[in-house]
Image 1 (cartoon, rainbow, N blue to C red):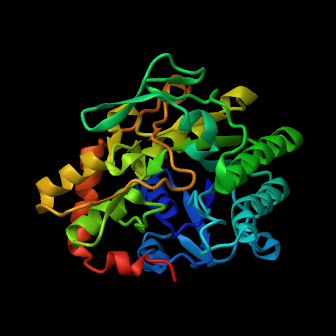
Image 2 (cartoon, rainbow, N blue to C red; image 1 turned 90 degrees about the vertical axis):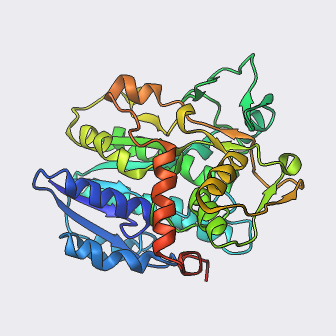
Image 3 (cartoon, helix red, strand yellow; image 1 turned 90 degrees about the horizontal axis):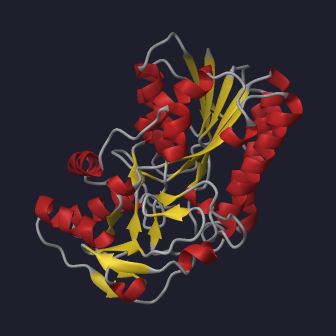
Length: 355
């Protein structure tokens, strides 16, 4: 089996390439990247030594994608993953759409030509902002926890796939939601196997930490280096919560999807996150960092930030039922992996800062 990975030198793409190779099975991994993400070059040589065939190409360019060698499956791991993208002055809205939607269209055309399957890595940010922003929460053990009664598609276990995806979801969320819809339509129209995995916050060693993406890596690296940190919004107390998932934990799910016979259309979309067991507030993360590195003050900024939400935790129960999939790496182990990497790479934040 030959697997093509877009964004192979990004954090998720490179971690999944390593995990799939480690699983054996005689697969050949072909990966391409445009290397515009600061830090992505650091993964090039290590992947090449593992036997990954690396190609310099841009998913936004139809001619680049047309020139890629034929493969059996495409893993679409390339995206601008920031919820602030297109609105923060660093990237334009057109660039965001070209990256996240136009790139997926080009990969779908590639799949049509080569009769290849597609696995799209999507995001928890396809779920509606308004109902999540209005969510009733209590502070329990220094972290927000949703309060009953729960809206349809929501429980203490997290957000289910049936939760509303109506606007607003942010420009970023909209590009991923549109990519999902097109991927499923291509699958139905051309008889292609297509799966959509809606990921929670991905985290682990080697992630390019920024405040708007890679928050766990950013926070731990910043705490270690005594760089300024602040709790933004929600009273400036750091109670906002996210779950986290190591991308390596996705590999067993991908293996099962690659080997699956054709499945019902309603079973093609699943949430894959660390769930309630990994849910951590920024205040709790700061306390973990203090225990690991010593005290470091965090400023308080109660002013709200665009698109921010008090609590985003994915319920992966559907993935467990359909695919017998569950995350394996606990949040504490993910944090420890990031901390060890931060110790060994003192310039990591500077390396991964936007140009």
